[in-house]
Length: 450
Image 1 (cartoon, one colour):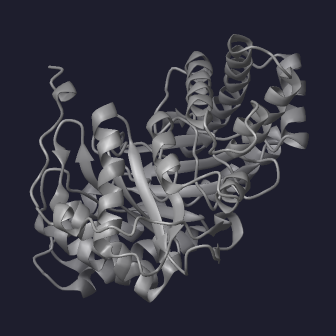
Image 2 (tube, helix red, strand yellow):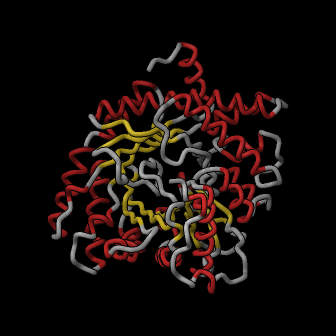
Image 3 (cartoon, helix red, strand yellow):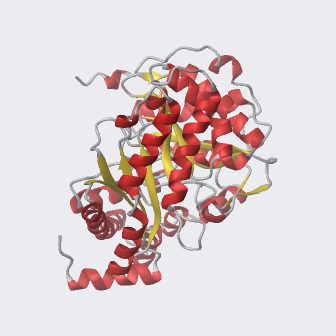
């Protein structure tokens, strides 16, 4: 793939002035061959496999940064859902999970990667013994590890919503928060979880993937915002076209980096995730793009329509630039990680209900939202269920990363790229009886596509 001189100059401008970066290169590693009924032997195999494949990931990523002058913010690894491995161990001891988790975490530390994902379970139709063991151990594991991230898929369009798993995850979130609320930032509950997502906390190396692969997550909210601001009062057709053209250029750069990394590591090139991922830094905000379109504050009436236009244009531009689109691919609207979004909540423009409505037209779902620490587990489960319903009915990936912390109206300081956010109001009315019914909701009629 070749870039023209004009594209190179424009890309340099995007990097220098508009915060263009590669948000993550994520190395997927299959651990299926590490299965062993003895946990100590299995940990040795896991350590050996991850270090053998990923030993040069960070070093090669830094060289690619130097070669192209393009920042790669995060270097990450995703592994086979570890519940698959725990199925092979004949034990109900939580200490077994902790031992495996610490092994994976220490390997990530040795390789100097930012995060490693895959403390995951897929329970949309039911639980295996490995799934149950892993889910019950999440609070302890996340508080005994630094880099390990966890995800649980509780629903799919084809299977419906496993409400037993939803309630269980509501209780897990509360248990995590009781030990340390910040551990909740490393846990996401999914519907339709993609097997090739390069973004944390939901990354895992799913079934059907190559033995090892590189998946790239691009970014660039600042670039899109600058384009929208320059267009002034252009109509929606022109606005969408310019966003599409810009997304094309951003994606081309992402594929260039992805293929170079795959070549250097001698692994498969996987996918490009087209998501716009914001940060807490000034100007690097999806909310800022929405406001540049003409809305006084993100969250006011019209915000869902603006986000739908943005997401659609980004996807259309991206798919023209690469034939290998995957992951989540849309616009991320986390509250704490997007300064504009956090300010919108603080000013009363953005509510939890409006945020939920906006997730129907973008990716991820309710991400990095802070709710009062006294919020019941059943209410958290109901929030998860609502978001799963949006994912299941619309046949899209949605997730919930929720942090019970502090009191309504206070600011929660999460630190670094996790940012800060106001504690959002939740309904005072109970959802307990509803989420406690148990069982699995039937799949929707749109699942019958065979």
